[in-house]
Each structure stands twice: as structure tokens, then as C-alpha cells.
Image 1 (spheres, rainbow, N blue to C red):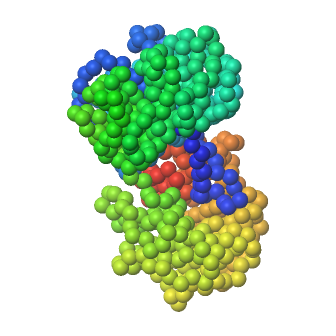
Image 2 (cartoon, rainbow, N blue to C red; image 1 turned 45 degrees about the vertical axis):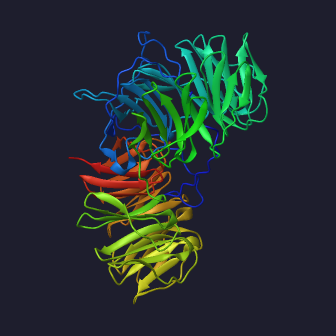
Length: 629
């Protein structure tokens, strides 16, 4: 079974949401096929996968009734994101050498198949009519067009292009699933939860443990095993689950594969062998490997993968380290036969095994840190900055990392020209760009700076924590008087004489006659971004609010749905604006709303539309590019 272990992950999302806001879970509908990665030609085989239980392909399937969703899909993942668009891949199942499935973080779904008009199979992104942004923890395929998956507190069913949540008996984090056929299956997870699918519904089954269960493998309707954290081994027999004690300490177990009712393997902190009715830690002289997944080809041969790209091969009665082409964590392995297999992992990593070699087929090359802001130049070059001092430069059609003098988070960037620019961030950090590169510039403050706008090479403004306002003049950054004491998050200058800034508690500041003044606001919501088209028209975006400036007044624009959460924006004209949201990419023009699907599901930090035909968006998940040819 190809499952992922229980891992506690802390994700800090810093984007257009203000410092006092909560990161929002994003759910969008992505393009039907965002990318295709060609894979090597595979040898035909009829050997069924050992990673997941499959049904005969002639099992009839009835597609659920669904209303097609109108789709506009011009946002595509940057090539640096790989076929999975920067997402971790957590489970893989090859039906045969020509067809298979993989799933992962951000609700990503990949299918390995031969596209119409092609002669060789390839991995391609699949987006069902109903999508989810939640990480897949497990997968079990019942026929080529139908499978079940587990996503935290959800059990989902995919059939003929439609993905639906099904009613689960409880709401723990589900971590493993194994379907025996279309009519029966099992799922396990936190707190020792065991759910049984029969007669068309999922029901709780009595569990002998309250420890987390990571993986389950059913031999048939009458027998199976489940394993988990701190080594509980549960055996299903005679219609009940019973805990079985292994011989000695085995540590946490993340996956298992039963070869038969007499033999099987489990992996985690070490390989554990089941033989003659007993689970026992397998002695070896290898260095420590934390293993996440195991797939056995036979009693004589198998593979296990784990952290830092580790790959172990079982052959001639021994587990041995095998050469790996990656240092990314590998979460799952599924062998088609002794000659062919696949492994998947972090950063969209896909490995293919053939001719006694594991080959890197695809991977993402994500930015070092989450990208927070964008700046574009008239010649088509762009810059992006982000956490951990990340600086990236776009030229000649590709993003490339640039040397940074710091590791402090960078929050905003603005380029004055090809040879001059600025970026600001945490701890009062200010960097200046010249043809010699980015260099640290003296700052008058140590608080965080969040917004930046350069009027020209000699004038500019930065804003930030506790109402900070910093003007740039005479080649020096200084601290100016501020009429407020809470965070300012965005600034947009129309000229040296006029500009605007926004922040917490509905703050809207106006700069005129050399003075920043607090204007009467129509909201107390946090305002995170401002984009002035000219001195009479502009836009302000907050987490759940959009304001428009015209006739010397700020007015609220009704959002198309009440539960929309906005992340970032880019105004094109007084009557046209693009935004990212929990519903996808939103386009507002002449009073009309459109929703565009996104292949990357994240709380975007910055967006910049270059014109009506092209734009970019960046965030914690990676980089998206919009073209409308």
C-alpha cells in the first residue's frame, strides 16, 4: 500500500492577508490538463500492481449525475513547477505499464495515460468537475476510471471525471485506504479510527487501539492488516480487529504490503518482516533510513522509499541501499513488475524504474522561499521577492534565482529601471539594486516593512508595522510622522505630491500637501492592497472586501458570492481588475464577474497583469502565468 506517514506540518502563509488574519484554505477548479510530462517508453506487462487492490477492468460503473461547470482556463503553471505544479505527490498506483494514477498535496491528481494522437503514455494533470485543495493522504483504485482517496477528515470518490466527498462516519484525519472491490473497502487514521465501506455507506468499525493508524492492506474480505504510529499491528480475522504484538520494539510504522496471508513487510523506522505468524524487526547493517512506503514484487524482491530520496532494494534476502537520483523526500512507491516501477515525492518528484536504474522523470524547482511581491519592467523583465531573502529575476522567458545578501523575509519590490530598484522586508530591511547586484542599504527602523512604491529614482515611500511611513529623498530613507499606530500594508503613489496607503482597521491614508492624513473609511476590515489607476480612479482590496474609488469617494463593490475570500489584485483600468481568491482567479470588467480556473491552489501573495493578454501571480505554492492569445 502506498500511503504517507503521519507528519505534523506547520504552514505559515503570509500573503495579502494582514498580520491579524487567519490563513485561508483555498479551493479552486483547475484546468483540465495543465501540463504533460513525457515518460520513457514502458514494457508491456499484465502484472497487477502490488501497491493497491484493483478490480477487474470490466466492472460496470455508473457515473454520478452532475451539472457541468463553465470553465475558463488561461492560467497555467510556470514550467518550473513540473507536471504537478509544485505540489508534493503522496501516492501512486500503476494499473499496468501504460496506465496509472498519482495524487498529492493541494488536491493534485495526475493520470498516466496515452493522450489522443500520441503514441507513448505521459503523466498529465487531471481536474474533475468538482475539485478540492486538500492534500491526499491515500489512494485506492478499483478500476481505471474509479478510485477512492482520503484527505484529512474526508473520504472522496472519483468516478468518470467527477470527484465527490462522501459521508464519513467520523472526522479524524484519514491516512490510509484500501478498497477490496466497488462494494467494500476500509479506511484508517487518527485515534485508531477504522471505517468500513459496505452496502454503499461508510460505517465505524470497532478498533482495539486509540493510536494513529497510517496504512491498511486487506488480503480479502475476511483478512487484513493495519499499522501505525508507535507500532500497533492490527489483524482483521473472524470479523474483528485484534492488536498483535511484534517481537521486540519496531518503532513507528508508515506503510505495509502483504504478499500473502503468511508473509508481508512493513516499513517506517526500519523494515519489519511478517513470517510464520510473527512480526519482527529485520536486522540489517544499513544506516538509519526513515521509510515511507513499500512495494513488493514477490517474496524475493521489493522496494522501499523514504526521506531525503532514500531507496532500498530487497533482493536475495537482504535490504540494500540503492542509488537515487533525488534528495527530495519520496512518499510512495508502486512497482508494476520486477522491471518497471514508479516513485513519487516532494516538489512534484516522479521517478521511473527501468533497466535496473531509477531515473528522474520530473520535478519542480520551487523558489527558496514563498514569493511575496512582483515588479515588472517595460522590456518584459520581471522581479519577484519573498521569504528567506528570496530574489528571482525573469528574463528570456524563464525565472532564475538571484544571489541575495540576506536571509530576512522580503515583502515588497519596485523597480525604477533596468538598472535600479528597491525591496523591503522584515526587521526594517532595505535592499538596493544596481548592475552590481542587490546590496543592503541603511534603514532608520527595525520593524517590518510591508509596502513599497518608488515614484522615480529619487523619490519613494515604504510603509509597515505600527503605522511606519518611510520617505526616500536625497538618497536617504527616513522615518516620517504617521497619523496611525497600526499596520500599514500597501502604498501607491500617483506622483511626488500625491499617494495613498492602506492597512488594518479599514485604514485609508491620503498623501497631499506634504502630509499623510487619515480619511474617513467605510469599513473596519483589514485592507491589504491599493492600486490607483489615476488620481480620480483606483481600487482597494481586503480579505473579504473590494473598494472602488471614483467621484472622489470610496465605494464597496459587491462580490459575486458571499463566501469569497480575496488574496491579491492587479488593476488594469478604472473598470477592470483581476483578483485571486478561494474561488479561483476573478476578473471584474464593466460590472461583470468571471471566474478563471487555476492549476495552483494557494493563497496568492501578489499578482501583476501586464496587459489584457498577459499576467503573473505568485504565492506559497509557486508561480502562475496568464496568457490570452
